[in-house]
Length: 453
Image 1 (cartoon, rainbow, N blue to C red):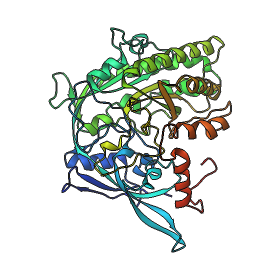
Image 2 (cartoon, helix red, strand yellow):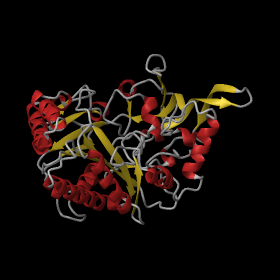
Image 3 (cartoon, rainbow, N blue to C red):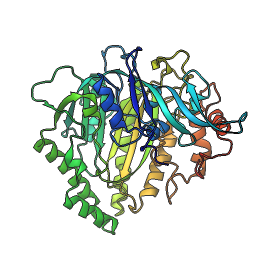
Image 4 (tube, rainbow, N blue to C red):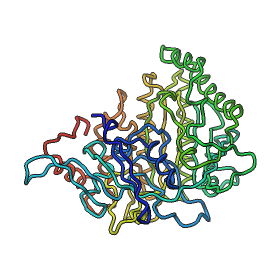
């Protein structure tokens, strides 16, 4: 079902405050942000690919990376630090009407209990259009760093150094891309910056890292050799990826980029290296972010090295780390707004001190030997470590999770126990089970279902 041909309209309403945008499910993220920019509007943070549709993006609570910087002014009207699903004010979906004994179009508004299950429905529904809130556009400065060792960036909390948390405090928006078998991650830090700083290059279009969007022959050839059995090349493959970024940033003058938000937030094209990824959100307190990252990075590195010593190289893509706020309904310009029931960053009413999520994604080329077993090992450790009185872990819908040695979405314990519990613990509205009942009632004939769902 291709929604991009007809369900792709975008209309901005500036007569209300905050402004609203009405968009079809087939409109792309890049088209939405381009239309908003023309009217002086934008979003706080978004996913990096521009070619994803709103229907797909909002089905899986797509997100970027952003929390308030220390001292940052109050959140701007129409914006949120959570997922883009929290921007939804209303939506129209195809649902079953028992009175007419047929499927019909029905509008749901943000205060209605049923909309909670539709705000991030994981493909269990068909939403055809959305009404989203928007806020004033912002100029951003994106600074890249390639010289901070992972032992410092992901070091212990309270260290007097260039830690990930210190960049969050200063700018609020950061992403680390850590290539395997390299010592210094690619750290991107975005900050709100109304005036162009000296030395920063102004950009007027998105996708400003051509060196990562267009693979050199040496990299693609090495990747092909790894998948053909020469996995011992994986450390060199990681180092080559790091070298390409370091050289590319210098040659293209891209260490400091400045411009409107769209042009800094969109930076992944379909031509980027195709990878598979697992993904998780660790919900915790803001002051616990560095501790979570430090424990993960230390454990990940030790396990990667243990596999390397056994001549096994399950990872040939980077680890990506981002941090967002939660889907706080108070960010929504709608009375009595409900939370997205199935969002990985849904707040826990019993833990109001948990206010952020740390996102971890582990990337590797599909078909890499031992990758599934390695993903399972890391996932099982995270399930044990980040489910206590300090944090809880949820799966990232758009990535792989529930790993067995054979593949993703294959572990019955994760599927049937952990995922439902992670979205139900601390909730007062029935959590996961109530969302499932709502989706089943709206689609009793299971038209919008699949074996996995």
